[in-house]
Length: 369
Image 1 (tube, rainbow, N blue to C red):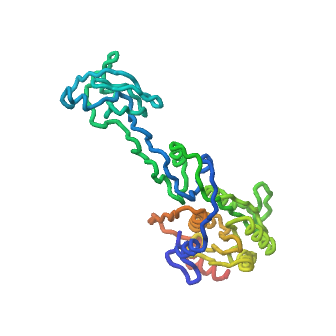
Image 2 (image 1 turned 120 degrees about the horizontal axis):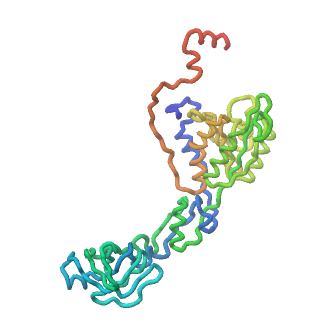
């Protein structure tokens, strides 16, 4: 839940996001890649159509290509029992190349080019065929069932603008136009590590007080959905030199650094101190629950996001603050967070509120304190 207001030392969420967005720059280096490898990548330049779609006038369905002008000279419009001679056929990829005279037509299949002498396609359901003669039960409208050249996409039309994130359907569209390669921004490299003596890697034996490091796994999975390259630096112990060395290495190899834990106010939370020594802290603590102990700063070659150690807090701050900032750094168009208003069916209470709901409990807490 996001706080609607904040204490003087806490930065409102919208202000924090604005600071993040203004502090980072979009990547500028680009690379040309095959469209097979372009899913999820960010275009660095417009993609422009080089052919028309459809490339020629073609049939929208299976039927018969006819000339309405010739038909109207013989029979009143919409009259039934009109007879035409079938003089050939057109298939997708195999157009009819002969002439079509008055009183003639051709069999045509979906996607086949419509001859210039024809201006409508009769659905096969409205035709009765006997040998090479068809009888029309209904005359189609002018240009009926014909898809015109360039009706969907015209040569020179911009398909996708720069900073567009390519989707799987976009790849299919580009392939249909014969576009084999696109120019995209170079992917970001993000270094990830967790801090804490109590954290253990998956598969290790837990001692009393130990927990498995789950935040790093979650963060890596969320980063992969953003299509960035991830450097996993593992778990760093609560040691000033170890944390400092991790930051220095990450700053040399990555565009952004994400750590989990070490940004609270405990005696062993050294991340803030190290960041102040080797970089600049832009802000620390945001008015949001969960996720208040969130830090952001600048290092010589990269930016730093310090997520809380609580798994829920780490996930929420990544989604609300980090992901939009990473997206900007990737060169993509902004994707505003969705905000919803909800009404709870029951009152929200935290554990302390429930514990202090009666005088006896409050007295007990006062004795303990």
